[in-house]
Image (cartoon, rainbow, N blue to C red; front, side, top):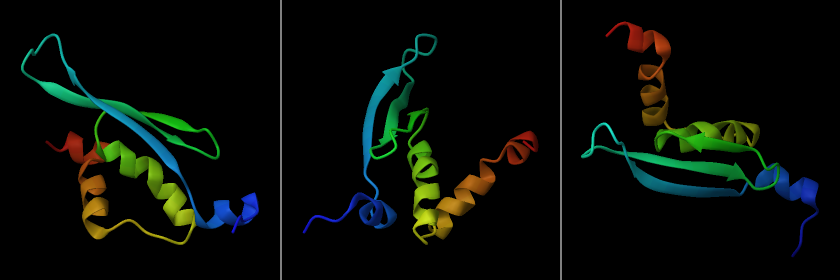
Length: 88
């Protein structure tokens, strides 16, 4: 069954994720995840510096649908806040 676009976008979101490992020149042994995620319907794209950026990009879409990220993700986000980094 094909749903009209406005109904399907309210209950379904599609994303394209492209990731790769990138070796830094200054630290030849260190690798970093890089990539991007694209929301298919809107075309919005975010470039990724680590894999947690994927969840950060998707979360607003989940909230618009009435969903909420899990507790462990929210705790990680809290510790990654700029204020938490300044305390170190």
